[in-house]
Length: 433
Image 1 (cartoon, helix red, strand yellow):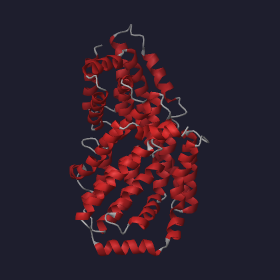
Image 2 (tube, helix red, strand yellow; image 1 turned 30 degrees about the vertical axis):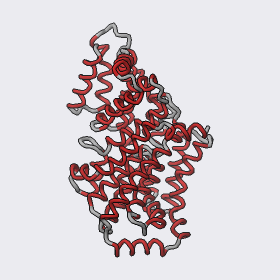
Image 3 (tube, helix red, strand yellow; image 1 turned 90 degrees about the vertical axis):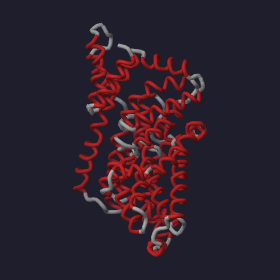
Image 4 (cartoon, one colour; image 1 turned 180 degrees about the vertical axis):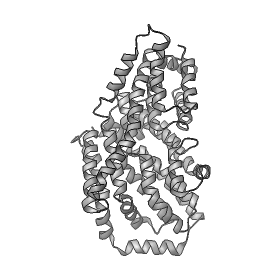
């Protein structure tokens, strides 16, 4: 089957809103239906689907999802916010920047962008509005900052990319730290300049800051300590080689249960079953997508579509940076219509051989792809963060999307640095073995 026909059929199925897993699975079966002599039979495709889930690395995905759910129920985002606000709450844009910092730190716990928006947004958006900040600005701030959930390690997206590319998940986790901090800084810079012009209610801001400072540093630190130490335990155990990412994910679940039940006392024993069911409901769609996409990737490889596309791109575009610009533009478009996990499963087998042929490291590309696709989570028509923010505030999705534009410009500026300065992603993995 010609490569153009194959991908036209794929796009048409997506346009008609066929479930992603169904599209990948159907396209995996299609060549053998059209050509019975095709070596990749239906039975082989089914085996690939089953084998695609037989991965110790992928076991980390449901564990991090469950950990994020427990953390959200445990009210951990409030403790992290108080810690940041204690230090910068009296500065220009202090509270909005504290919210961005909270999103960054919460991302290092949940590994999920939607979970970060839901957990931090439910607490911070009403607070910022009460402080006199514009509701759309506050909503947009959390919507875009929530994108850090897939960039700051541990990230579910890194795990999925690692499983589809054979890259080291530990190196991806380490490599994602500096890009995540860079994006956080860029978002804070915009928030600072916005707040220089739109100052909020000075009296209420001062009163809220004084209320936090009146607790004293030791009290604020004691209340936030268990939340702050969580990512240190998770990431520290991975970076020191004590645990694998999957084992660290299991530790994060146990730790989240412990502090939520016994320290912050926000959840009871009876709620644990509900959280496990919520975790299962969140993971099952991802499971089907990964399973079907594994068979789809195998078909793409056997039909040599990756080779054909790669040859075409490298013939037309010979410059390394031009190739990177082209690949990133395509990913930005795909990110507008598909969630990041199906995009990773779809685009990795196609684009990874292309970028490797021009000398791009797989770890660098994985981080670049994850940051790129995070933009799609806040752009219409399918940006999941927009719809979560809509459910939190009741603001129309298109109004939220319009308000996110300045934040997205800051986000894209950071993406450009990540694309063209590989050391931002590769320096830490090179020194931490």
